[in-house]
Amino acid sequence: MLSKKAKNITPSLTIGISTKVKELIDQGLDIINLSIGEPNFCTPTPAKEAAVESIYTNKAKYGPASGITELRKTIIHKLKTENNISYQLDEIVVSSGAKHAITNALIALINPGDEVLIPKPYWVSYPEMIKLVGGNPVFLDTKMKNNFKMTTEDIIDVITPKTKMIFITNPSNPTGAVYSKEELKSIVNLCIQHNIFILADEIYERICYKDNFISIASLSEKAKNITITINGLSKSAAMTGWRIGYTAANQTISKAISAIQGHLTSHPCVISQYGAIKALNSCQEDIQTMVLNYKKKRDIALNMLEKIKDISFIKPNGAFYVFIDISSLKNKLKYNDYFSISFANQLLEQEKVAVVPGVAFGMDDFIRISYACDNDTLIEGIKRISSFINNL
Ligand code: PMP
Ligand code: GLU
Image 1 (cartoon, rainbow, N blue to C red):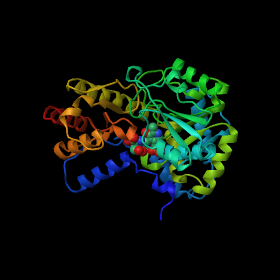
Image 2: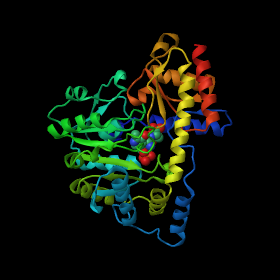
Image 3: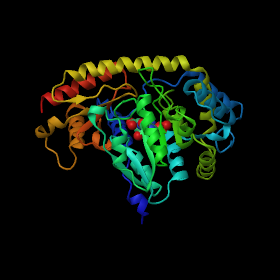
Image 4: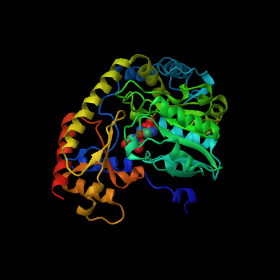
């Protein structure tokens, strides 16, 4: 009955686990949720007010396929002032979340059989999105000693004449690693040399604990021309359910994305777009407060995790995750197909803590925790993980 594409897709583990956790909590169970990457902050009030006002002033009608002009101008201003990149209005398309922005970019550029390089560990949805548009995901190994950041040597090994695009997630989900300017430059030069487009997923850009975030497209005109930058409001402004993301790309690509979107969804929700203008224009302080809080949470998490024997991790410099190596525990736990899934299931059953198995990110020796929760939940969650490991 189903199409080959539908049969070939596995459901999202991050969304699946968080749905299961919500059901268990509704049943009255005391579950600590360290699984989904969802800010525990509330959307800033001015953004909420602007959205409500758009309803009462009857602005919530059909809008332009690429997003309302005022929001695109606000994004252009953000890219200029924060990232030092100049874009024109027809180079920005606002979509229904970063997920939709990535999918639009893939539909615009990928032909059946094209290869798309994804460094491991990768964010859960990338391979499935690529398969949905008929492309072939090609996985690229990185090294823990390089903080799981890909190097040009790692990339060269997997380039073929079919390579059309490479994904780079900066800051990374699931590791929290942040690329330096020099690291990005060498990757860009290689991509220019081999005619490879870069999909730069910068959704965690503002959640960066060092002052060194560099947007790839800012490196040069050539870099900008081959890069499709993905960003959005889900993480930076705690607006996950509002579904606002965007692409910044050259005119040809953006025009195609706009045409695709015009047929598939018309445009993202207009009410959310009005909220997004306000969030980008006047919620800087709220966002800075959130980031300071995430940094404190990261430090709480790392201090506690360091004391647990038999696990290791790299120090995250951005996003709100810790990717934890649990491979030393393999001989202590019974498992069938996937070690990380068995580990996560048993942790949930015994200690009522939800985490995401590393296999969702292509690495079965790991689990991922999100620390975007309140401090008490985080502390209790890690205490329970520690006791689970000690009792294995
Ligand atoms: N990219 C990465 C790396 C993510 O972690 C997420 C999860 N939010 C997304 C894209 C999708 O973001 P959105 O919720 O805006 O679709
Ligand atoms: N991106 C978040 C995560 O990795 C939210 C869930 C999702 O969109 O997959 O947990």
